[in-house]
Length: 288
Image (cartoon, rainbow, N blue to C red; front, side, top):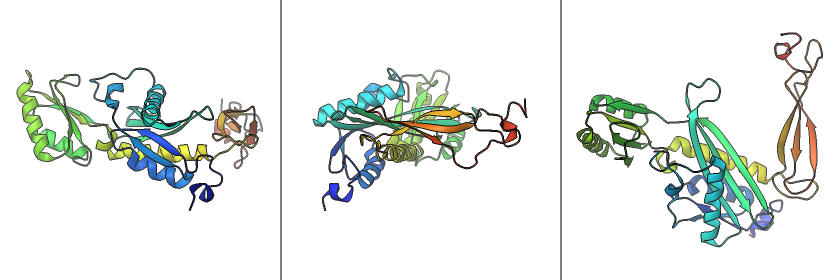
């Protein structure tokens, strides 16, 4: 059956989308978008995306996370000769709540040059991103098990985290032992730095976050503007002022959300549903 008939609400049904990746991201992105939108995500190769920056710090990333994803998408579109393209980019740091856990944020950018649209899906969550400096093989083994090796691959280098003598993509125990011995022999201090390999194909935890970013992108692409029908009609602003349940005074809690179109001037203010009032603990008057 024609994809456009199966997905009549999707403006991208039956269309080809270029996805530039060399780390297997098509395995989680294509099934999500193809099924929901009726499009066909096509992996584009022939370009070393590591040249745009690496998590192992041997090649720094230029610009922001979003800019890097946009640049990848554009390269893929040019290589494939397609007006529609996708690319993802991740970042890692401490969790935004307490700063105690490693955290992963993923952007998946969609570019439509025919409609002049750029829409980004986003997901975040706890990351498998750990590291250890040691000269002891037993400690390295314990660390590897903690890092969920070999399902999650490892990176090894002598001396410390910025040593250029790097061994990536270590995925079996014998290879890890050999890499550890080699790095320890290269190290003047006898220390070896081990860390998680954060490339998508080497880190299943990150791959799942990329899949969630694809789900978020689908939700945005399926949200069409009620005025012009363009995809990406989405939240752009939160309006504070939800009344306190005790005194009725406006609080800093969200009272309404504003959705807007990327193409035309259409905007909608949607009042928050239940609960229709804020906890007094969030009220500056009741709880100064």
